[in-house]
Image (cartoon, rainbow, N blue to C red):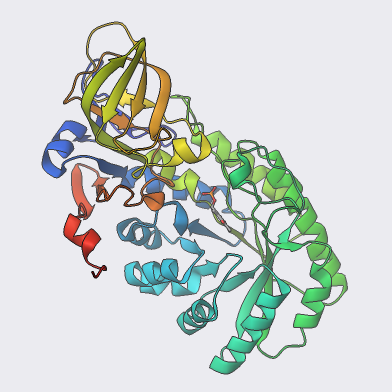
Length: 425
Ligand SMILES: *Cc1c(COP(=O)(O)O)cnc(C)c1O
């Protein structure tokens, strides 16, 4: 039976059965590819993209998937094949898009506060859709590089709407105190000046107010401010083709019954109602919402030990594989792949890295587990592998993409030789 578009792809085919990703057994994947292992459902990724595409079907739009959430080449190719564009934040991410789906170069927008001349050149040569420019000096540099390469640069000013979004402070970006964007009050003057440049084409305006934002309200507020700016620019003779609403729509990391469908509908309604007067193209840049729930980090229990009245479950995955709990105090549901009988007890689930911050959960009520058992850390498809590292000289995990009844390795497990290769003595 297929899973509804809204739920996690990880499920038990029968009550009490072991956990599956779609039609594929996680136990079989662990045997075949080892652990720690990232497992993604291609079907859910495609469904989530389609939700956004359908929600904005009433106007010309482009969903530019935020590559930084999960930059696996196979996932980029999958999304490109379904018509997605991409939001990138580095030259490296552009190289990934070009490697996975060169035909999508014209559907790329380039965000980020610190673009280097080399990155700008790469993007101009590739013929990307637009630069989301975050400062006046970046715009000067863009004009200079465009003139040098004789390629006109389409740009959007990323404005800072000064809107508060209730999320973790590290991933909130839409207040004047944050490093992101240009003060929305300065924008008209900058567009007017740029309109004189032969090498700059004012294409749009963009915002991105933060990540893991659960309510639609701040998106509506930000879009209202953008809408006013667009109208003011029209009065001043600057006609923009596109509005880019950024990304940031959050998921529920706790609830099993989270329903994505009304979330996207609510989000789209807030954006559309604020943009009612704008007839141009809409870009959006969702990352987390597309991939987070499609992925799990599969890990094997190495040891279970008691210190005083605390129980530690030590897994072969660690903070270098999934840093979100350590970095953002993030919650990930942890599901034993095969449930054992017995009363759930509070445990800390921790990795082998030499940091007390290396934990996945603290005082979490978990069914009994033994060494050798498999656990699935759910909702790990976004900002999981993408933020992984080699800390403690730990090779990074392998990644598997599940499509229908097929599972394929999309990134082999790193070897110690891979890690040592760039070094010399
Ligand atoms: C990170 C980021 C996104 C994606 O954010 P999500 O919360 O993953 O949807 C989109 N646009 C920009 C500019 C970003 O920095």
